[in-house]
Each structure stands twice: as C-alpha cells, then as structure tokens.
Length: 312
Length: 309
Image (cartoon, rainbow over all chains, first blue to last red; front, side, top):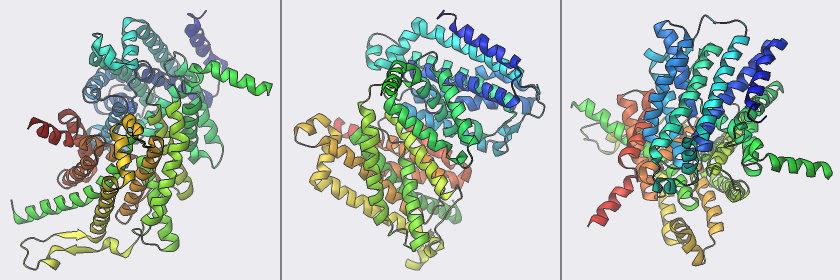
C-alpha cells in the first residue's frame, strides 16, 4: 500500500482534469504540482543534504530563460527548453556550486541568495540575449486548454518524485544525510563531501530548472523580476518545504497545496491582497517556532495538539 | 591620463569612500550580531528600512531634520531589536529541528513581515525627504583656491559620512572602554569562558541585537537625505551588509569598516566606468572574489602576517 501510494496519488491527480474542472481550478492544480516539483528539488539539497539554498530562483530562472531564449532567438519551440535546460542548468549549478559550496551552513544560504540576485541583475542588463526588463513573450501558445500542461507537469513531478526517492534510498542518500548531520565527521569517514554536495546541488538545480522551463511554456511570459524573484520564488520554495515537512517525501506536495491555496485565499480577500507577504512571513515564523519539521514531519505533534484541543 | 579623466577618477574614488563609510556602519551592525550571537540576521536591511521610515515620518509630519531623527530612530530600533531577539529568535534557538539554519529562515520571515507592513502603511511609492541641503554641493576650489583639479561633493553625502564616522567612533569607545562593551567582546570571543567570568551571556546577546539594530537604524537616517525610500529596499542592504562581513572577515569590526570602504569604492568605480545598472554586479564580483581568494576576509591577511613574524 505504502509503496503504491505515489502511483495512487498520481492516478487520482491524472483523473482530475476529466472531471471537467474550470480553467481557474486547472491553473491552481498546475501551480500546486509545479511548486511540489520545486519543493522536492529544494528538499533534496536542503532537507536531505542540509545545504539550505536561498537562491533556487537562480536555477528556476535559468531554466525559464533557456526555454525563452530558445524560442526568442532560435525560433524553435519553447518545449525544447525542457531537455536543453538540463545541460544549461547543470553548467550553472557547477559554477555556483564551485563558488558557494565552500561555504558552510548559513553562509552557503547567503551565498546562494547572492547568486540569485547576480543572475537577476545580469538578466536585466544583458538585453541583447534576454531582452532585459521587457521580458520574453511566447506568442503562440501550444495548447489553449490547460489539460495538457497539467499532464506535462504531472509527468515531470512523477519523474522527480521517483528520482528523489531513488537517490535518497541509495548509498548517495546516506552520504547526503551524513553530510547534513555532521560534515566534518562525514569527511573524516572518507566521504568526499564536496563531490556529494555538488551532486545534490546539480540534481536539485536540474529539477528546479525543468520547472522553470515548464513555467515559460505554460505562462507564456517571463521577465527577470518574475523568474529570479527572491521572495516569490526562492523564499516561497523554502516555505513550501518548511510548511510541508523538511526531509519527507510528501512534505513538498503538502506544502505546495497549503501555500498555493493560502496565496489564492489571501488574494481573494479584498484589501488583503497586498499583505500576502505578511501572512507568509507570519506563517513562516509560526511554523519555525511550533512545527519546525513541518506538517508532515510533525504530524504526530499536530495530531496530539488537535486532540487536546478537542478534549479541552 | 588627461586631467579630465583624472578628475573623474578622483571624484569617483571620493564618492565611493563617502558611500563606503555609510556601508561600513551597516556592516558593523551585522558583524556585531554575527560575532556575538553566531546567527545571521537577514532582516538587517529591513530594520534599516524601518529606521528610514521613522526618519521620513518625523520629517514629513514634524519637520525634524533626518540627522536629528537618529536620536529617536536609534532607541526605537534598539527596542525593536530586543523584542525580536527575545520573543522570536530565542525560542527558535531552543527548538530541535532537522535544519540548523532555521533561525536564518526565521529572520527572513521577520524581514518579509516588516517590509510588507511598510508597504501597507506607506504604499510602495518612492519617497524622499526634500531637505534643502540635499541638492547642495561644495567644491574643492572653495577651500583651496589654486587647486589644479576641481572636485564637487554633495553636502548631504559629506555630512552623512561625518556622522557615520562619529557613530563609529562612539561605538569603538563603547566596545573598547566600557564594562558592557568588554562583556560583549568577551561573549563574542568565547561564550563559555565569558559565562564563567560572570558575564550574563543571555543579556549580552539580547543587548547586542538591539545595538546592531540601532546602528543600522541610524545608518538608515543617514541614508535618507541622499537616497529614495521604498518598502522593499531592505533586501539589497541586507546583501550589502553580508558582502561587507564576508569581505571584512566574520565578526571583525575593523574588517567591517575596511570592507565597507572597499565595497563603496568598487561600486562607485563600476557605476562610473561600466554603467549604473551594473553596480550591483560589481558588488557581487567583489563578494565572489573575496570568497575564492580571501575566504577568511581581509583581516585574516593581516593576522597571518603577524603570525608569520
């Protein structure tokens, strides 16, 4: 049962479009799955390998721009961005890893944050390649209906899920956890920490880049402020995982559901729309203080709390 | 080099130094918090933004000069910092979690809330305090009549720089000469040993966070006559503070000053010779270069030399 759970969930999700959901709900579903993919990617690096990245927007943006530039400059379909972004993002990940992975703990976090900002500024200024602040527009949409976009991102999510699961359950996963728990001890046991951290970073970056390339094709418009956004991409990525559950398979999915719905609910309340960062921030503070391992990770705690609430 | 070229270069270098002095003040606040508490405060720039808004409100409603508003903004920020440390950061330090960086993420959350509240109250419009000296400048030829080259410096920048120097000097006196300052430095060097010597470490931590916030808040007041103000400006100053601390060496106050000056000059050079939009990239080129070539910060170079002797 437990082994089949991902397939069952994926199956249920795959049936959803057949129910004739409105375009709005399809959009929400697509966002939830896209954020789960990014969350899973971050979780691999941050949750399992312990390297907290504040700059996943860098990889998301590079993926998105790969698709956008292929379409804009070479005139081929933006969908080529999906396979090609794998190579491009890997190169970026190796460079960023070379610079940032020599930093430990919070300094790594800030290093990656800086990398995200560097790439944003570069995308804004290298106007000959990226069109700068004008952004890139995909003028011909592949599909009018959202159903096919949904299936594309669902397949990406499923592949990412199994990739992450496979990696974590292999020897590699144990190396990652060892590095997270105590990097010096891992090093002294003969684990090449730099190598494995680079692997974790690259895998995580590639998955995030795929989500970015998908985003370009799905939304049809990108600009540096959207895809390299610090708060709306990098921090939300962390929140998806923190809220859902760090170092759990299902955490990113649960977190994505909560975050996307929360954002939508706040948006629908008039006058509160501008305040969504306040709510996100407060949620983040509350989660870190009371449920440091997220909804999935602290589920027993949460259940106990709810039961006590009911009894009282 | 032609004399016009030389003039531009000198002008760039001097405005860079003036900017660097203000950056140093921001960096010192961050490095103090980092040194004593071993945590990174990613809400640092947002605290500065709060300081700037206090100065802005005082100016627009009571016509209080931004430089005088330091006397109000600094204490307010001090207590805000104490509140954040006591009721938000301390509880998290005690919680067991998989990711040790929880407190860093927490400060991000605090920063988000601060920036967003500012957006709600003041809207995201750009604001300025139109003080009359903001557009004034003084010229080198005013002082030195026969000067071969001509330099012009903004009045507001020069005053801000001098006030920043004054605050830094006061801080140095506080850290070097007073009991409280010595306790803070002791806590930064070795928490356990300081505790054994009778230093109330817990109190020092709370106090340092307040002090760091007050410093960055006063930096905000110094920035406001020369800079425009909007709620999201915090993020870039957090990064600047971080780049300075990396450049100068973690937890080193002198390093923060040197780092701030270097960063200011370099940024000024990039915006003159490469283009305005590239100044932030220049900032990060310095950052990456510092990480690769002097991972211990500028101050570590001097230390090594001393050990070598």
